Image (cartoon, rainbow, N blue to C red):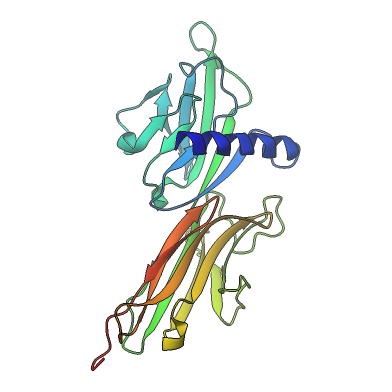
Length: 259
């Protein structure tokens, strides 16, 4: 994971230099699917990590996760956290509760009475997928939800980040509003896209994919592939997920009566 993390951080550094003046050179956006591990970059490190503090921010609250390069033991995430040698923050088994923005701060001065400006901020967006049970009529509904600190809409095409969430078919074509319905949840501001599939025998090996894009580049996705659960049985959707590259999942239905 270390090599992957370092390559990812290098890419973020190059992207930040290209986007200076757009979203802030010290701000990064990281996209991940729930259940995966993530590496959050710290772009303002000093000579070592003893001056590094990581702060988690969400819902107008701030919680220190790392202080002076050491994990705080009184946080819920303690067992899932790890500080990298480059002061990056590694979080294992991401959940929807982890979305928000993270601040990497470097304290300076003899008594750590001031900190280096500016702070490095990382916005963590978490993609979570779920599905209903397969009904007697062999239909299943897939739910794809993006958790974002700033309440990104389902089609955030007007802001500088241009973050979008949508379903595509096997050919990679974005599904229409009649096929897939996306809406912002009023209670949270998160976006959820639903897709209802009527499972047919000819759908064997067919794929549907939920994608998160930023400035038209895929950041993370979940693919559902329809498979037969056994010879002569009905079909099931199987899913798998991918972040920064793209991954997938699979689902299958129980055999039909008399198969």
